[in-house]
Length: 287
Ligand code: A3P
Image 1 (spheres, helix red, strand yellow):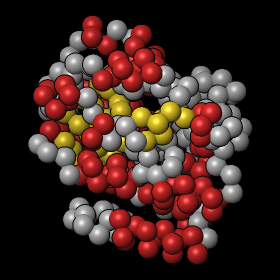
Image 2 (image 1 turned 90 degrees about the horizontal axis):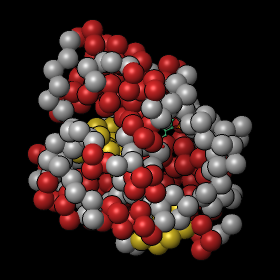
Image 3 (image 1 turned 60 degrees about the horizontal axis):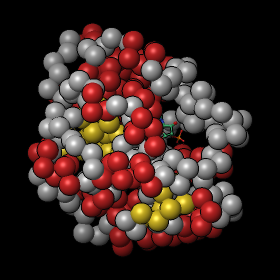
Image 4 (image 1 turned 180 degrees about the vertical axis):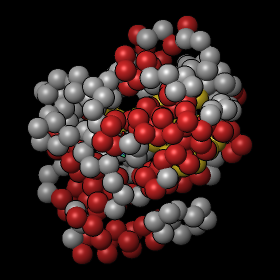
């Protein structure tokens, strides 16, 4: 199916209509944030699911019931998804934990007033592309990626769900009031998960014993997290996500783009990246 059939254009970006019908976008627009909410913000395929495991475990002080009994999409709901409207989020006790893929300039009015805590995760866009290519091939609510070079063109032009990676990252890096935003790279989490858990816990103002941080990190390493039925999307019917084509928790590594992009594609990616990111001063692990 085509973009016109599967996507809605909202605030200038494509959103998959099945997950984000008009009433859920309206719900989010009128949503009331609290200052002590914790919001995981990502461009898709940048480690959202990983943080939906880590952040609740930090909040629970390492009690695993929260990740053993509740699927990640109800544990840390996406505010722009239709399920947000039916979960009674207004009744949840503080601190509530949410996720969103919105760009900074798409956020609703109350976000800028309440200034909740934001954990913004960034992943090397070459790996985001690689992960997306496989994901678009298995998720029926997305337009099939087609040949790799065509999907690369769409990705670099932002003609994919949630628009351009470059605009997303630049928007959040240039956010005002940065004291309520923590930036973390997927690659840092790969290199030092225990240290990353400690950094996130500190940002959340949760003091945890060393053993608890170790336990959380151990629980969240790829091979362990992949076993969690509440987080590996095995509860989703295969008509929607066909994990026989590509698993949701696929490889969980940094640098897989080397196995995906041809030399010409990688060169083209570099040129576009250099141009689009020329004014960005943030030091990424991969640069
Ligand atoms: P790959 O497709 O490269 O394996 P999101 O949750 O934002 O959609 O991102 C999905 C990506 O994060 C997938 O990347 C997935 O495997 C990876 N991921 C999820 N949990 C992870 C973990 N515990 N450790 C490392 N990577 C993880």
